[in-house]
Amino acid sequence: MKKKQLCIGLVLAALAVYAAAEGTITTQEGNLFLSPAGGNVVVNGSLGVGTMTPGKTVDVVGDIVASNGGMAFAVAADSYGGNLWTNNAYNRSNPTSGWARTVTLKNGNVGVGTASPSQKLSVSGGWIEPAAGYGLNFKDNAWGGSGDDAYLKYYSEGGENTKLVLANNNDMDDDISFIQMGAERLTIYNGNVGVGTTTPVSRLDVNGNVTVRGNIDASNNTIVRVREFQILDQGTGQYRTLKLVNGQITVA
Image (cartoon, rainbow, N blue to C red; front, side):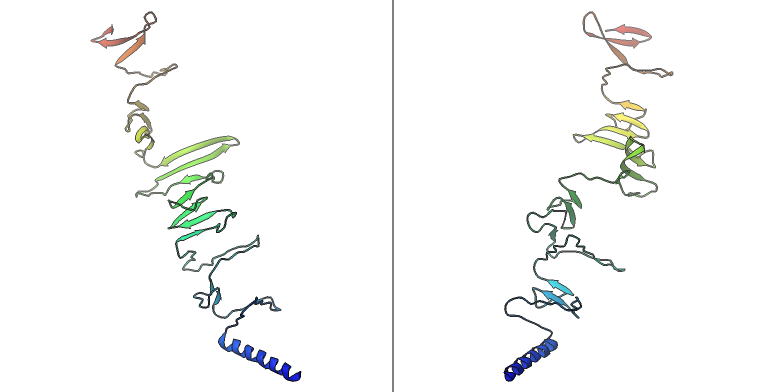
C-alpha cells in the first residue's frame, strides 16, 4: 500500500515538474477546474481558449457568452488611442436569435437596428431623438470662410411655447431651398422669399400664377404693381380683363 502511494506521489510530482517546465496542463477528457483559494488566476504570457497558439494576450477561438446583467466592456486608450475591430469587417450584437440588436459595424458603417448599414450611420425601426434643446448641426465653415453655420433645432422659448428652426448663418447670399420633384420650388435668399425663382428681388417674388382665396391687405402706403387685372363678371360668370393703355382703362 505504501509503495502504491509512493508511486502516485512520484507521478503527481512529475506532472507538477512537467507543467512547470512546459507551461502546459492538459486533460484528455472531462473538465478542468481552476479554483484557487485567493480567487485569482494569474497568467504570465498569453492565454489561449480554443487554441494552442494564442497570438494575443487573450486569444479566444469560439463564442463568448457573458450572463451577468451588469457586465461591462472597456477598451483602455493611451496617447495612441484604442481600437475595436473584427477581422471579417462584420460584427453585430445579436449572434443568436432572440437577442436584442443594437449596433452593427460593417465596412466602416454603423447601423442601429439594421445589419446592413449603407451609410456612415444608418438607423432603422425608430426615431432619432436628440436631447431637449438639441437637433442636427452641420460642420462649421465646411467650404472656408468664418462664421458659417447651419442647423435644424427644436427648442422651448419658455414653457410649452416651442420653436422649430431651420437656419444658416453669416452670409446674406447663403440661401435655404425647398426642392420637390427634383426642382427648386421655394427659396429664401438675402431675406427675400422666392416662389418659382431662385433669385427673389423683393420680400415675396412669385414667378407664376397666384391664387388668392381671401383679402389682400395693401395698406401702409404699399404700392401694388400689376400689368392687368382679371375680374369676374357677376352677370355673365366670365372673367374680364382690365388694362391701362395710354392712360385709358380698357375692358376686354
